[in-house]
Length: 92
Length: 497
Image 1 (tube, rainbow over the protein chains, first blue to last red):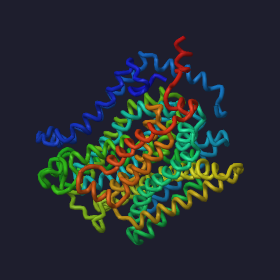
Image 2 (image 1 turned 120 degrees about the vertical axis):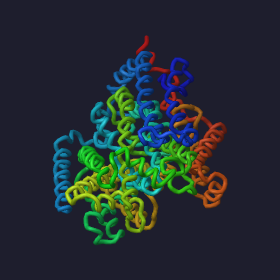
Image 3 (image 1 turned 135 degrees about the vertical axis):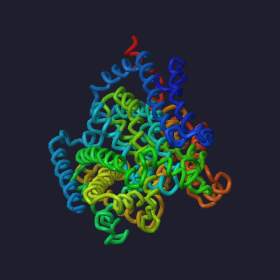
Image 4 (image 1 turned 30 degrees about the horizontal axis):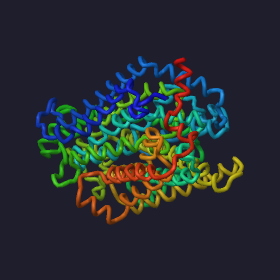
């Protein structure tokens, strides 16, 4: 199956830990940025921080998507779909 | 005028939805009905996911939180992006399990992964309970919108009752594909409404520009833009945001209707590509929070200081009748379409995972009757809950996430640790629910960690119990384990050899 940091500890998917960065940015650092008084464009900094976190999440997921493709995840999936499409409708 | 617009929007959508449902119905198998024949491509899959972004919770709940508390409304900004960071990794696993064993519901997964039909029954019941709480969110909102449309001529109770009847009628007339169609219409209308309101809101509250609203709010209510918000004594600190958002992200894909959504995709690549773009859609919550702040600046006082009604009250006082009608009509769809999907999911789980294992050999037609009867009862329970419980939509949502979060350890550990057993999951559920619901536990968390989301604490206790008990109980069969954790890597060998 070769997916995710947790599956069998496959070292070639360590880049998927990038998906943990939004948790650090949006949740972990929330108490830290809460004290920043700077308000660019008149917007409260903690709010801008969260907005930036959303954009960052999309960028990171896109990077992981590219890396997954480079590591053959899509090919493996295509093979899985081909292997299981014959049995559609029947429990295996 | 207002009422006329609402009626036109509702009738037009319903006609379109029913027509669409009749035209596109291909098969009559349960798999075609419940998981779209596992054939949804990238575009429809995008719309199904996006439909979960603009919800009554987001529009009324978050604007109400912005109005009453300020910064705590930022919780909305974390909910979607963090959920998809996890979803990118988790949803393809759910999809693969569904495809391998032809699973239809979430309870199917539990029964198959842990080789225990009884665990399917139990998790099915817990899933239904959390879905009912989620329906409650839609009903509370729908009740408010009914009141707005009828100029507060009727009581909250009557409005909620009407809302419940409307929802059941919608389910019976429309069906699942029609509900998905109505959800699409609702999304388009919602974007129109948000653009219309946000573009004109500065003038309504005497601000120079949209961004000026945030500056004015900070001047009038210092501290509104950071945690804990307007009320310095509120427990909604940055720690509250941290624990609540993690609890939402971990619980999100464990909701039965969202778990099932992963089954519907044509390919895992469609799921992963969708996860790239979906977070950006949640930037739109900026405008919802903007409207909440504007309502505060306008000195809006919703009846009974009900924060869920703040946005509707603001709109009905400051905008013209046609716009109020458009908002009300959109609001009806906003609650009806997801509510219908939730009730349908709950009904099918009940017949497939609770009744079928107990009474084997029932006919398909009987199942349909049982499903419909059950979802009517579930809607009635949700109405009763909506009337008897008072609270903000955000609070109800967090309660729903705490309840469904109890199934999260069984899902996550099922995919990453082959040693996880059915008995372990059961023990985790018992320990988790005691930590979540027992009065002594609630008092204890409140005293020790008032800013922490209790659901997250209970989830951690649940997960630790699952691990300990699993270590002491025998492994499930190899066939069952392989559903969660790759044992032979059979599929990958085929592709690489």
